[in-house]
Image (cartoon, rainbow, N blue to C red; front, side, top):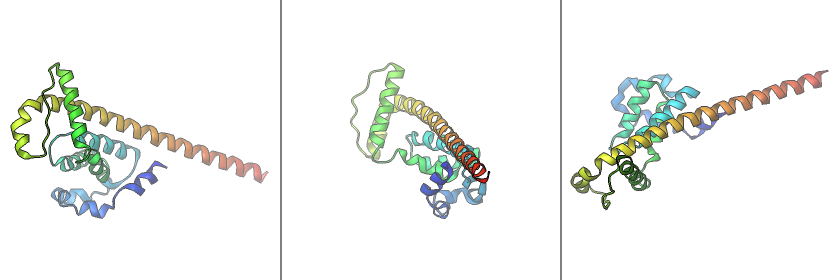
Length: 178
């Protein structure tokens, strides 16, 4: 089932609980409901993690953790999914968000020369902030919805498949018994 898949790929809960960022949550992070794997908690975690991944600011893992606590979503999955946007994927994804934002706002794209420095960020963010934030909000919302729907559909498919297998097994056992 889908639950077994997520259990296999999720990091150890003790590692996550001992993370320096999650220690800020205190005893709230030890609530066992935040570690359960069920259709609702996993779907909510996908929504939270994928939405927070598109936030173009640091500490989005902490925001994902806070939202997971608030919405009672699976905490480790929410925090892990934030890393869809990572140092390798960050530039192309945020560039696409900026490009989408300029199209939605109907403004021309500014010449985009990215440098991985805080000085570049402070000097040039006034040119890129509005379309980037709009693009990130749109893509974050769409990713959150798509992730939630995907999990619910796959989970439901797995449950129905498991039911059919059990039903076939029972029919087979019944026909062998007679």
